Image (cartoon, rainbow, N blue to C red):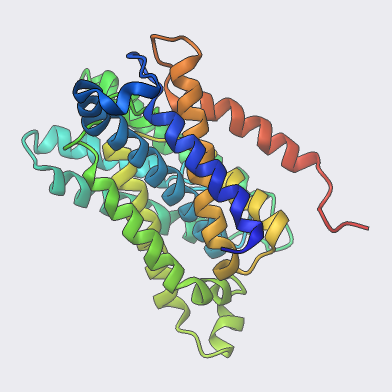
Length: 317
């Protein structure tokens, strides 16, 4: 392993180990010799740690892809309407098909997220390219409108408690048998790596990408599909975690540049580690009670975003 990867890998392993021994039930160094402690780790702690890692990695990569396709560094699925559209899809399934199996919820939520992402890209294409700050503004307004629609429907049909679960991510209910859907997001992250060079070229714009021999429409469709399914699966399983897809890609790009194939593994690892650190903090802040990790990351993400806005580029002269 290259020397520059040793410390990040060690930090991620340390966080994962800490996650296994952090919770309401204190597990000491001798826990690995206790059958009951091992059972707790196998049923609850280990699945939760994997769910956090998969969520952080996939949401960071989804944000990176959406930023490439939108050609703007200030958008992410949680604020650009993708997450809100996914929640709207789940709400529609809950109302129209209450007994729908999990695969149907995921499929219809993914379809709603895809439609929401397509509409967002169609909206920002009408904006003047000389006004890039209009893109995140439109994203916030568009996401806010969809989110308000979700809240209004939830209030109308007395489903606000369910809406709160979908819009504020937390991992307290994750255990064996209730997180495996997230492995699909891991597969989508690997698929994104295979398409990394195409996404980088697509980020140059339709004319430039077409001139380089790329089928721009097909690559954009593949990217939106990855972003939509990953977002929908996350919303269905644990809810929405804000800022992951916004701050993580920007921090990594500051350190490693904009080559998607080179930065995508680091983006996935940093996203996984940052969400896991926030999840551990969520378990410790009000121990033995838990704070939703979406709340913790909202504070951390906002602070990191403000730092990104004011910090000078690493290579600035």
